[in-house]
Each structure stands twice: as C-alpha cells, then as structure tokens.
Image (cartoon, rainbow, N blue to C red):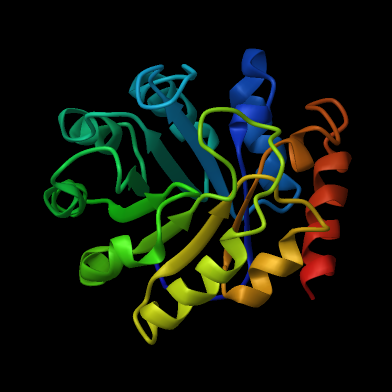
Length: 226
C-alpha cells in the first residue's frame, strides 16, 4: 500500500443500511469512496454496540479498496488477530482504551495490519507524542465516540494542526471522524488531515438503489476542500 497525502474519503458504514451492507460498500466504492470505514463498538468502551469481526469478514469480499477498522472497544488486544484475519488493512485502537497502547500497536503490526491510534476530543495531541514511530495513522475524533450524526467539535482543528506538525515527514495518515460534511471538511483538510470519515453526510444522501447521491455527496466534500 503506497503512502500518499492526497485527500481520501472514507464513508462510515455505521450510517449505511445494515440490511444491505455488502451492496452499500460496493455502491460507495463505485461512486468514488477511497476507503471504507468500519466502526466497531462494544457497549462498554462506548455506549453503543455495532458489529464484530464476523461482519468485517463477511464484508471483505465487497470491499475492493482499503478496509479501515476503527475499534471503539476495550480491551483491544484479545481481538486484534480476529480483525486481522477478517481482512482489515488498518486497525485503529484508542489511546485511552488500555494501559499498554504501545504493545497494542506493535501487536497490530505483527498481525500484518497498518496500526492506527485514535484520540477522544478531550485527549491532547501530546498523548501520542511517544507513539509516532509505531503508527501508520492518527485519528483525532471530532465527536465523542459511540454514535453517528453528532455535531462537529471545533477544538479538534488546532489539535489536527498540532498533530500534523508532530508527524513531520513520517508516512502517517491523519484521519478525522465525526461531523464531517462540506462545511467542516475544509477546516480539517487545511489543518493537515488527509483521510475524512463521513457517515450520514454520504450514506444519508442516497441508497443502494440510488447511489448517485453518494457520489454527489463525496464530490461536494472534495470540492469544498479544493
């Protein structure tokens, strides 16, 4: 997987039709999605339950590009191998989810996946300063994790800028998740983000039977950032 900092859009299937997730992934990719973002929630680390490795494995044949798995779970380590076996390209864990995040990131890489670390809105950028040589992706959350459709938290913008300065020349993606739409996307892109997770802003604009709405939504985000 070649690294590049071009703008990428990663629709979150949390906002898709759960009765047709395979078709939803195919439709989003056909309409221009760069990555597919899979939000895994356990009802413990976050106040919601979504799906686990079996669903990720079932979706892998329907995702031809990057499968980006965001683990909002605790503990993380016992499940890394299952998500790697399910076909994840990236596995992202929260820095707040356990006491040994350095070990978690090493385990993700050892399982053959790219390693990401996420920060909740109240967690400062400095929390990942000592992890930069162990990660392939940083994910500053722009909403509190657990539910889709929340309002964008503006204080993430200076945090993204700080993270981008910390990254320097390292081949690390900066991804933003939460409240991304054509009005907020330019703020995070200008600050240094290159992967934008969008849920309802994409899947709320169409359907499997009318996927052109997905393409229109993603083009609107790209054009706003340009």
